[in-house]
Length: 301
Ligand SMILES: C[S@@+](CC[C@H](N)C(=O)[O-])C[C@H]1O[C@@H](n2cnc3c(N)ncnc32)[C@H](O)[C@@H]1O
Image 1 (cartoon, rainbow, N blue to C red):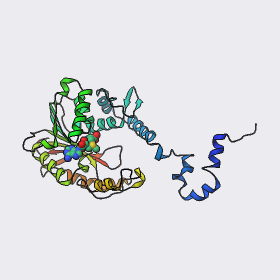
Image 2: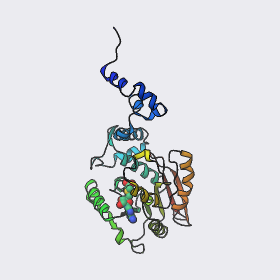
Image 3: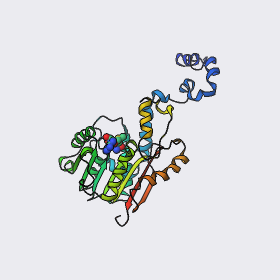
Image 4: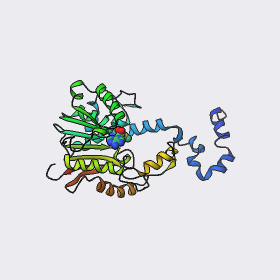
């Protein structure tokens, strides 16, 4: 039998692998349409495929503790997340991260019977995971009004009524450090870096005086790499984002050594006060530039 190319490859050879294309693109061919037909899915149009791959890699590497945290957290499919099925569980990136956050916190802080305040909770994935796994006494969420509407609706849907009742929702307009009360653990995930510096200082000062443990997970700095998202949100949003938060140095987030070096500044700026020390700190997978730390106040750990 004579071996011949089929129609599929004939077209690729005539288009992407044409001699003109190869000559024109050789210098960059591994990032061009040539390689997108050979070895690499085009990242510009394969976001979901890569996201599911990240989910799978994280799922494969879950510890038994993390897996159990997820198994105990029911109704994770509410809101139609992008999921994979793995060992009988539906897994999305939000809750894969939540399991890692909660595991990290619980390794240095006794969550059962504690009181918790979370600043900037989004729809409430971390709260959902914590309250599904531990007997938390009270959980206060501080957030912007519309975000609170979402977290209230979501958490009342995924949690049973008795557990939902433990949660209080405080809008930033009602947040008064002298009135909010004391909490053992404060949490901030992926939001201090998006707030004005003065606001972050206000929250850190509240944590210093009203809390005894603090879990923070945020970027170690800013980055400016148009290849990541084509700066699709526009230059005004990018300019604003670059100014927010306490860590505004632009770093190369694809260089692990740079991220680790920047984590020292992260630890410094997020230490709530002189009596606090970092009980643990580490890279927070999967995004290269996100760091996490659990601080404890001296004599209270
Ligand atoms: C990127 S989301 C992260 C949500 C959640 N922690 C997560 O990781 O899924 C940032 C959150 O911070 C909240 N936020 C923004 N500015 C805030 C402020 N000044 N005070 C409290 N929360 C704020 C937003 O409403 C949102 O809930």
